[in-house]
Length: 80
Image (cartoon, rainbow, N blue to C red; front, side):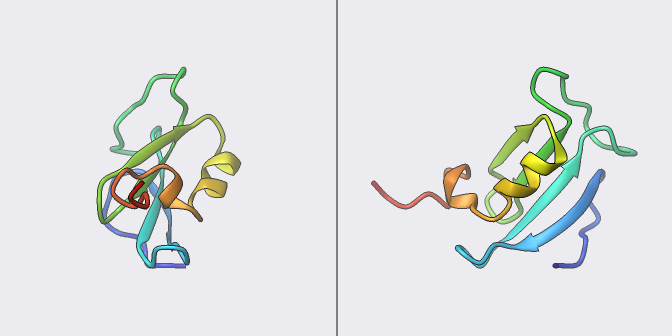
């Protein structure tokens, strides 16, 4: 696990093996965090390098997506 950055709501940080880049898990209801809508989900995965993000309804789902930012971060996606 990577050290937690000073970002409101950040509860976990990892380095994705596939890209070697840091990915953050943010609780949007955390203290000082941006409050997302219920439809979009409480949890957010964030590519800390590029700013790509994806919202999730459960923490478990969000943690699963942390391993592969190339699937949801536009800058991490391979050129097509």
